[in-house]
Length: 149
Image (cartoon, rainbow, N blue to C red; front, side, top):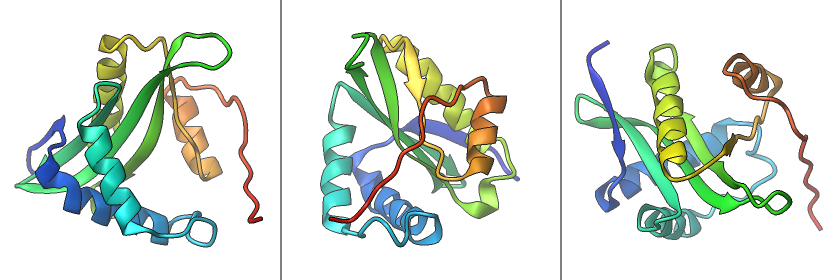
């Protein structure tokens, strides 16, 4: 594996971010639950890249973006403490066994803290991902459910 870098995303990264987000949606446990709407993903990416209350980080290797971690920052609705909430964390399968996932996580944690976050929250679509968060020091706080109406 060659060297990689973690950086803030720019508007020129949006097509790749949306492509990875769609891949995440189609390959993962959300595929039968969440409708794919690329136009909404494009608008969200533009809004978050330009927002002072959010960050979109990408990993890049040999000029190719192979991972993304985006989060928003908000005052928690109970405590009022600034909380960073992950929107997407996706690394291409061929890069998952490298340091890229953990480097994206650490960069997001550092930046969220610099932005004033006291807490950071992630979703775990599978028990395996939940265990990985626990290894990284996260505690499970709830399990989410969704139903089509």
